[in-house]
Each structure stands twice: as structure tokens, then as C-alpha cells.
Length: 222
Image 1 (cartoon, rainbow, N blue to C red):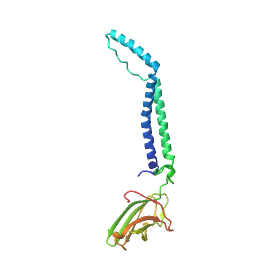
Image 2 (cartoon, rainbow, N blue to C red; image 1 turned 90 degrees about the vertical axis):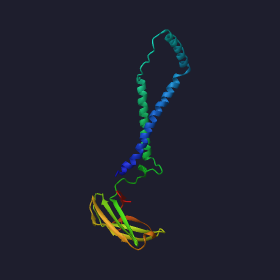
Image 3 (cartoon, rainbow, N blue to C red; image 1 turned 120 degrees about the horizontal axis):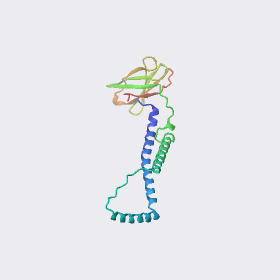
Image 4 (tube, rainbow, N blue to C red; image 1 turned 135 degrees about the vertical axis):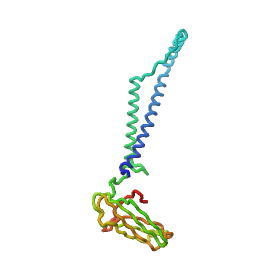
């Protein structure tokens, strides 16, 4: 599973890469067009027409084929390409910083993240089995924190079809002392109403004092 930091950095990096890949050739094409436009000014136009006239006269009197000179880049052209690359890189860095830190609606970046600390509990498995008068529920959690967790219980709220809270059941997590990097299990059975009359259930975890312990979901948990 990827780290929350990687999920936050993924989109700004993609935006920065696309900005660089698009802006670099666009800037090169714009500069090329401007150079060509400047080249064909009125003064240059007449100079080129004059040179072309006498060049054609010389070619008519010569039986040798004109050979095209091989193109070689000049130092000025290398300098232009480097400057354009540097400008595109600066734009990419600016877009990365902007997308990462500017508050943007519906985008999870550093301004909308309260904390990137890993929650101590991870719900790694959750399954249920329906029967005629209710359902049974089994789950597995993992202590991914650095301190042991004691006296945990799974608090399952069962909702009816009219969004009415029918019952709240506490299922004790076993073992009672959940050490770091270890798993615990819980289960319950509800047999008061038919599954067709139930809307669903909600799972949370509380300690021995009734304080809710934050958790995240992973693996095959729905």
C-alpha cells in the first residue's frame, strides 16, 4: 500500500511533468517563428532577393551540381535551447508548488491534509454472513502503531431501512492486549431482524474508556 505522502505528491508531479513536456516544444516553436519573422523583414527581403538573382546566374553558367551544406548548430542556438529548457523547468517547478500548496477545491494537497501520521489501527478484513433472522460479522484488525493497545472493542451500529439506529453492539477484540505489529479479531451475531429490513452497519473501534480509536481500511476490507 502506498504511503499518504506519495498519494499527495503523485498528482502535482504529474502536472509538473506535463507542463514541462508541453511548454518546452511550444516555446521552441514560438521562438523559431519569431526568428523567421524577423529574418524576413523588408531589408532582409531585398538583400535575399539580390543574392538569389546573382546566385541563380552563377548556377546557370556552372555545370556542377550544388551540394547542400550540412547543418550544424551554432553556439547561439544551443544557448536558446538551454534557456527554453530552463524556463520550462521553472514553470514545471512553479506548477508543482502551486498545485501542492494552493487551496484548490476537491483536490487533496498539503493545505487540506490535517495529518500524514499513520493511524494506529488498520481494518484488514471484514466479512459477513446473512441468515433468515439477521447476520453475523467477523473482522480482523492490525496494530500498525508503536505502542500496545489494550481493551479494544469493535462498536457496530446497525441501521434500519428508515435510517433508524436499531442497535449498537460492542464486540471485544481478541486478544485484549494488542501489541505492535500484531493482529486481533472480533465477531458478533445479530438475530433480531431479517436482512431485508436492515439498511446496513457501521464499524468503529473504542478503547476501554469508550473513546474512539481512529482506524483506516486496507487489504480486502470493504
